Image (cartoon, rainbow, N blue to C red):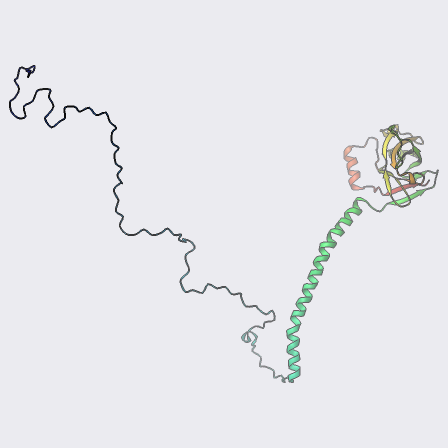
Length: 308
């Protein structure tokens, strides 16, 4: 049974006539497909034609430019030049007529040529040897001489005044007396067999007004033995008034030091005391003090050595 469409138009008659909702005759009635979809086949990209042939990559030197083909690239040393080479004959030509000289005998000529050829090398060798010796002397002797002068400047030759045992040594208006004795360890530690503590007491007495203003501590003091070895001392007490006005003439002021020496020399070590040249002038300005120090410095090269 054929139904009439909504617009009431009757169907067409003929071989292609079909119902309004009927599919065409060449289409299956059931178009539902539940299977897997087929994979698309991969296709290669279209080839791009490249004219000519590709060359393999290669490094090309840009700088420096290549040398021309066929040029000789070998290096050869410069020829040696003789030191006794004579200038060309044209440079020695003079306006004076040449003086005829008799030709020497063959033996004498050979000896003269040999002497001329051997003299310059020998003289050059002597100059080289002399220059080498001079360089060694300057390199070794220069610093040594400089160091010696610096040492002598910092430590000049001392004048040693030997003071007999129990007597006083007088220098620059000041009288010095010294005593030496062995003591126990002042720190309270147990005694050791490899060292001996020593105490040195010195008294300074001004003999006049000039001696009263020379109340500075000794510039140096140490213990020394007969072999010339030295042991330092540390100042532990000084009763000298710091002001020159308080230093009285004829009054001894006590100074005390301590040190350590080997027990084998404890009974023979002597005291070497070098007095200071410091002068504390009352009322002297700082400018005058500096001027006196730099204009007329007093050397501190006198040593009092007290025998035991």
